[in-house]
Amino acid sequence: MKRQDCDNGGFTLVELLISLVIFSIGILAVGSMQLTSMKGNTQAVMMTEGLAVAEDKMEELLTLAYDGPELDVGDHEETVDNNTINWSVTEDTSRTYSLKDILLSVTWSEKGQQKSVELRSLRAE
Image (cartoon, rainbow, N blue to C red; front, side):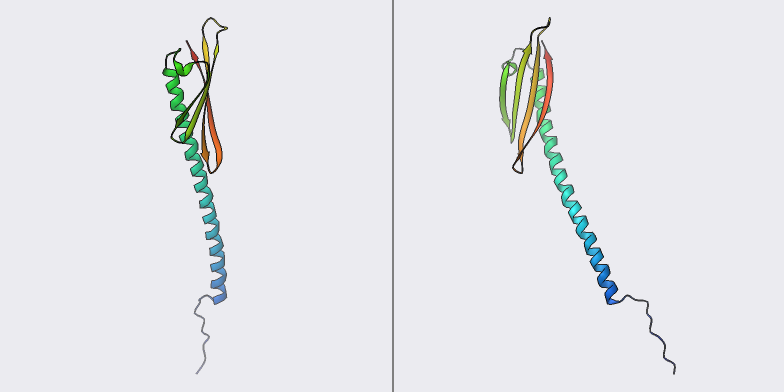
């Protein structure tokens, strides 16, 4: 009787281990990218929330009466949730009409670092 070679076309143990190592490295890289993406998304959310608070406050200031107390010349501060809102008002009366320059900043703490966003607008009398 003639002996036949037994070639089942399968993988050897070494080939399986090498492919497993390559696959593991790929999975670790994808996990690292996922963590970086999550950190970036968190920062974007915080920046968006800070900008929304700044826009809301600026819109509120622009709808007030020109001589309202929140638009008095000088520095002002307010705290909303975990955000500190600072705005300074200067007035230019050198023209035929009065003009107030409003510089508003919103500051918040993110992982021990201070982050902020600034808006500037002009308000005519």
